[in-house]
Image (cartoon, rainbow, N blue to C red; front, side):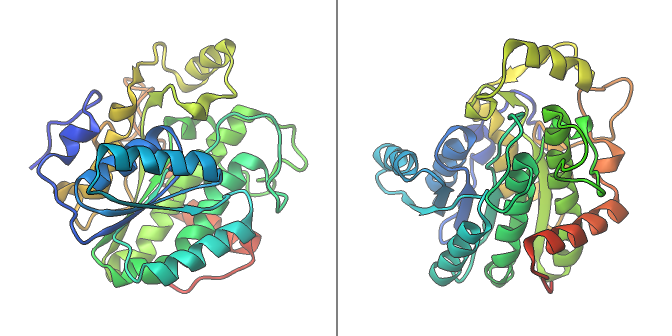
Length: 316
């Protein structure tokens, strides 16, 4: 039966009646915004939650804040910098040792529309952080996810995927002129395509992968934005009026993706406003998913490129 959740639904509404006792949930980007809210809600439902972030002080404060609100909650932290593949590998190794089973992996962290910068490994920062860091981290955790089946992987994409497809000839802006919105769109398309390719490989093993558009929320993700950027985003996305969400509403689709019975055994999807998105259309340019973000051939090509760039192949 389809839910009646929508744009304004909150995390507490979505999680109502759901229990996650005995299950382990891993959340990246756990030091602020949607990551903190997602960790709080999953912990309140009984999950053992591991929050990851690159700033130890801010991450510890977030974990302590959840503990103060929920004294019985099981919440811990791990340090990981998605813009440093060595850090990603080290964090994944620690998690594999600590968690034989991972039932939920919520890849929530990200950067948006930042000036041109590069990761420690030389990748364009948005593509390297939003996609390649999460690609490597997820693939390294696959043994624990498969061991926990049924398990779910949720990758935060964005309606921003409509701003840019993958440039397979120059994904890291080494030859073309840098455009922060084109780079952001490419990284969010990559998140969606990763979900498609990952689900193809794992569905037969009881693990599903879906992409989520959380909506527009005023969090630290937008710390690089200026007032003119909102107008640019509106013009490029076709949305004449962007309806901002609260943090609890912004994290609701992620929590729905992680826990909804409606999605049991279903993957390779793009989700928005707590429902499965329809293809983008002229009637609804601000909503839906563009065809290039669901293209299976492109998803496979991206998987191969990602393995090449992180220097590791993964048997799934």
